[in-house]
Length: 301
Image (tube, rainbow, N blue to C red; front, side, top):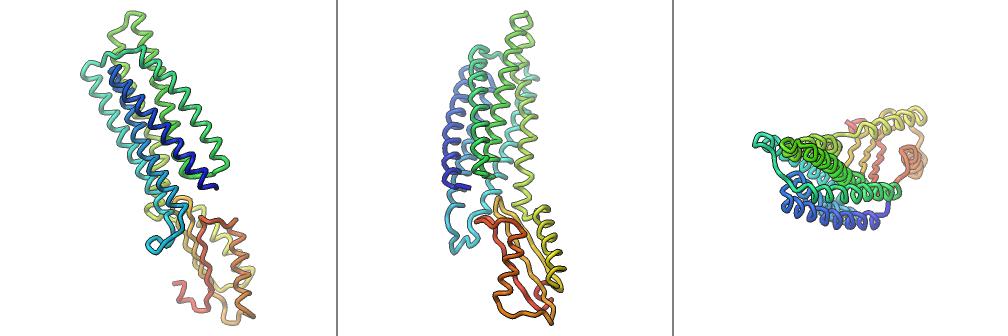
């Protein structure tokens, strides 16, 4: 994965999302549409998250130092956790705002302006979402993948706004203007509910990484490889530990050799390491692998 390409795409995404945020906030104030205003503030918070992601991508590209000897991989799930938490908070705010809007008798809004806004940004946001997804097939960046969720959410918000405002316009034209005032707060409620699934999609893996919960798939892979190696090479026993922080995978394996194990040189152990490493998959900068050998079982307890 090219970190430079990742940073470039995140920077581009941040600038464009900030422009969308300003447009939404201004349109919301001018038209009186709380749902448009909400869309603008969502984009503004998404911009803040993108700035954090860009900083994280730059830090990950740096070499480890005395204070952060394993690098800055741990920052990636922390940023994603912040993003997912913000999405949940925004959804709760929008839901309550919509409920109170209905209780208070709805809102009159300038339909012509908001329909134009929703139509234009539906096209822009969907186009950029598919563009980023296409670019990330080559980059294979977790940050880009989850960052792009914000574009999909924003695009879905714009679609919801467009359909709802067109419905309100139809109601007015058919003489049901008294119902059209409830469209704006009703949109807020629906948008809030639609935001929860993507928020949880971000939160779940990020929370697992922050809490240090062992990834099941990686743990199973390591145990499968070591069980086979134990039989093939006659190891007495082994212990393994895995952890994941964002895209970084940490694997620690301790092998117990039998007392009569024929060991001719240290190079023989290096050959075993290479064999185990190859079976675990292709090595890259995000994989930290430690394999040690001992003849005393107490070192794996």
